Image 1 (cartoon, rainbow, N blue to C red):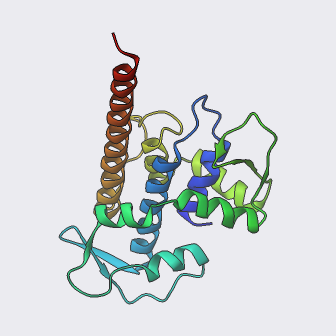
Image 2 (cartoon, one colour):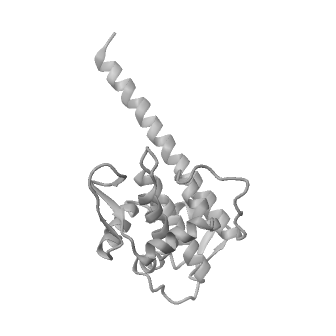
Image 3 (cartoon, rainbow, N blue to C red):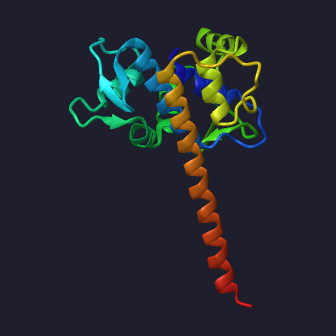
Length: 201
């Protein structure tokens, strides 16, 4: 599977008490797509901008959709702009696709939930591949998972990313997730202040 699909499966399998945020995961999935496209030559990162490459369209449908959305003419798009544009509701898109492919199945209440329905990973070769990639601490997958809180924070013992473009994308995903969290906190404070205003002294 692609890095994005592996990441989604890991998010579903995560046993963290607090569910992985759908917005956070959507941003990380968009970043995972970028890294796979960069690795395949579908685009290049030049001066912080995503420049389309000459590689053929990926076989994976969702990755192909991502590649088709790349801005093809100058001025090209920044990584940050791509994450916010492509990442909108992307977790729900991946859930639907993986369910359609038989990689996810409905789950009774009590597990992580993305959207209205709860799902679990099905025991398939794709699941085994994602788990194997995770267990050998593949740097890109580990870094993206860490950004959304899967497996705890990064460890000094984990291998670092040896690709400048992948490093830049992971950093952009981290910044976007932090920005999203800041928006959430600001809304919480504003809502609390509004409630207090109506409650009165």
